[in-house]
Length: 351
Image (cartoon, rainbow, N blue to C red):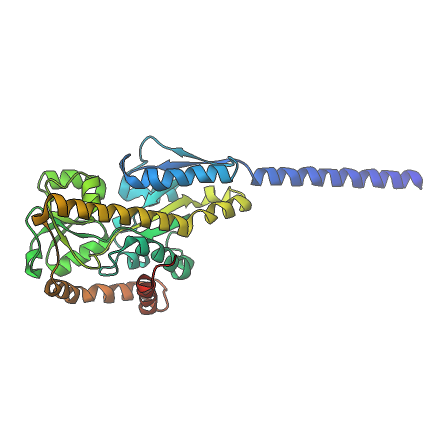
């Protein structure tokens, strides 16, 4: 009997020991180190890289004690317009994606591209992240990837080689580079001819006269060195729309990260990246406007109340079109979501 009990105890001990070893192996596998390859398509000197993305990566590496690392690739994998597919298909693990580069594909996200919302990107950027998290994320517009952060960028104005816009009729026939699908619709509503091209091609388009101008932030005109050919700046209160940027990671690569490290990463991503980007962009935009007003005061002007009203009247159908598209994508009450977005933008800034 004792011998039998000893054998049973030995067998039990062996089984328990095997379970502990197996459990430890599973835990080790779950916490395996992960390196995320980042596909960079923005110019090296673009402020977002040095001021937001690289510090964020360094902070994550420190916070996860090196279990999650980043590899900033020497050049982009694929074109700027293909970055969603690059991440989705695992050709790179992480990238900034501009949904507006692929018309008709991310129609829910066009909410963040609508015109006349705000001239203050420090509020616009994080407000859109909040709206995305509350209303759009559950509809999985970026299925196959995980959204680390998403934000609206700098409201655009009219930059042109042809002169200031003084009347809504001045838009007629202008060939304007459209930064997003929504921008193209806005241009058509105003009577212009949209040229759908990524920002990485703006210098060639402007310097060769292929375009007469663009919907562009003033600061980005300097960042991409097109303030020479496109040197007339008409500021539109509330902006003529803006691009949306999404920082996406491949879903399978995200799933390889431990739950604890995922929580750590999201705690310093999401709204924090959106807020940092918004603050950076707003400071750069105000600086660029002041520079232009100082260096070339006759080449920058704010749209008159009459022009602003005429633009608003022509753009009313843009909002109706988004309501219809968003409803078709499963958003229960697009009008209420836009109203909530506007309310967030109108609220006093929190300290």
